[in-house]
Length: 326
Image 1 (cartoon, rainbow, N blue to C red):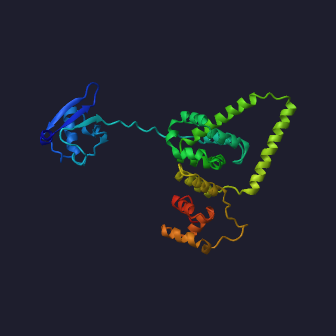
Image 2 (cartoon, helix red, strand yellow):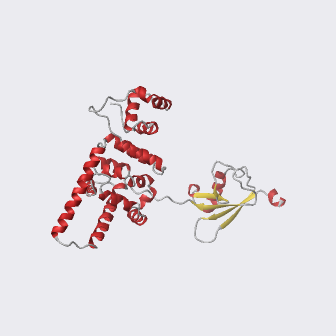
């Protein structure tokens, strides 16, 4: 063992083309040499630019500016040389025309005008079904690595708001290009499952069918009326804040998701309501926001109103730039 340590050499195991590995012995190559120097030696023997080579020792990729000694290489050991894995050029994100987005919006609105409409309930059941979700990802492979879009797909309030108008859908598509394609396939699944279910039950008569359809319309109308009485319309500011929260909380806990829902369900201030809460009522929250470097109290109070006093959500909202001081 001592004889090996006294001899200053290392081995290069080069495997850059089909066939057996090429073994090269580098005599008098000191361990205080950098990995970059060893890479140059590998380039001479492999006839491949050093920038295309990866040097590996005991399963670890070596860094160019480190010495062999610092990298754990000892005399008599082998450093493996392989070609770097070529990164495939990223495909350009999909783009959508206004006509395509309008068609998607119209399709989504058939689910209902409110998040608790029966159509949206069926859609969310599909999104929580592993086989249905796998089918959506199969048609949009890049979606599997887009945790933000996957998170948005499970927020029914956000999806219903996106379907409200084309401008909102356009912003969502620009921020998350896979979202429209995922929603398209979701609608295909909703229609196919609905058709499969209705085909199992043949209507007894046209009159009975009309009564059933009328009953469903009345139920939906009652739900929408009740929802409208208990919930104010979602403002652009709330939607922007909710989208920001969904992005930042892609893989967060259920408590963070609860905060997102509070952003959408918050009631916006209006001239017909009671006077705006004074700054002193948010004294503790404002002090916290000052500590974060947010000194514009008018903007801070506005964010606190939108977020129902949640200081963390208000801080995220101001930093996101989704609202601006008028």
